[in-house]
Image (cartoon, rainbow, N blue to C red; front, side, top):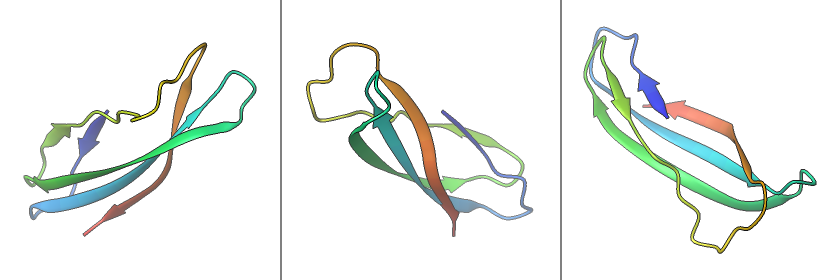
Length: 67
C-alpha cells in the first residue's frame, strides 16, 4: 500500500489490515508501523500474513492512525 502524508511535518502511521477469505470471513490481521513519512511525501508498505492462506484472499484497511 502507499501511505501519503499530507501534513507539513514528518509523521508516522499505524495501519491495521484485515485479510478475508472468499466467504468474507476474517482469516488474519496484520499491523503495520510506517515510521517517519516525510512531509508531503509517500511511503510504501506491505502487509503480510503469517498464516498459510489459500483460495481467494482479499484485504481491507480496518484502521489507520497518524502520530
